[in-house]
Amino acid sequence: MRDAVVVEAVRTPIGKRNGALRDWHPADLSAHVLAALVDRTGIDPALVDDVVWGCVSQVGEQTNNIGRTAVLAAGWPESVPGTTVDRQCGSSQQALHFAAAGVVSGQYDLAVAGGVESMTRVPMGSSVGSGVGIPGGEKLAARYDGVPFNQGIGAELIAERWGLSRARLDEFALLSHERAAAAIDAGAFVEQIVGVPARAEDGSSFLFDGDQGVRRGGTLESLAKLKPAFKPDGVIHAGNASQISDGSAALLVTTSERAAQLGLRPLVRVHTAVLAGDDPIAMLTAPIPATAKALAKSGLKIDEIGAFEVNEAFASVPLAWLAETGADPAALNPLGGAIALGHPLGGSGAQLSTRLIHHLVANRIRYGLQTMCEGGGTANATIFELI
Image (tube, one colour):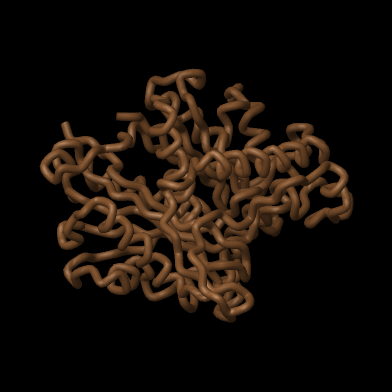
């Protein structure tokens, strides 16, 4: 029986908005991680059956099928196709699901999954504000009584529903930064990151090789000074929400048999991959049913999973997930999350996968689960098994 294994996973460091990656066109940034896959594995890119690439704001520099333009920008043979996926924040996690499904079904023997987002060069919401209409329509508006879909309001609704105070959210945000800083200090990201040539503000050149958003020494008192972002009396603010970021990541997926033929060592098996939908107004709760679905489909129990990556779009999302699943808090985002490291939308799923896979390998953890909330009230959940 065919399986799907990940034999390499690489990522750029995540840059802050207008930060170290500001000069990189997103197609070129994508090409950079594709080239790194070849450098690290020695594969002939002509063998790749497809490149499945996640990207959310598909407008301007990120339009015209950036999955394909990335392949060409990387100098790969013109025979290698590419396609672009939009499942909102889960776009590159969905790209991995598609790549794994293609490999298991026999449609692919070797595929690349990944994604990119340059939120500096293509600001969030650019596609909505393009002047050619708005998402949805009369029927959608009628179904939900004209209530607008807003992720920030959804995060507030979640905090209210699960009784999450601002102090609790801020404590979680500080923990994200503390864990990310500790991971950086321990060298946990060194092997997975491919450095990117960058230009400093003074014009000098340097190799950007460390995530840029981590803040050290934060306090509850400093976070308390930040104004609520979505409601005057709300609990969500810039300090307990994900950062606006730039970044890319890529994973090479094949079968165990093909990996052996190519002399490649599998890191993990894609054990289970599922999807779930939930209320699109609260919007960000679908990781909870997605996790339940993944556990049911896999036959695993929550305490058999040794590490979890639950995307920190807002602190209320992983905290509500934690309350519902009963997972070990120490295993949740052990290396920090998007609050500290950043959230480059279409690239985030592959970024999380890369962090989680390398964490499983480094610590000999058998199972890891990744899930993330997505615009429209959906979520992907993926279980990886160490090989």
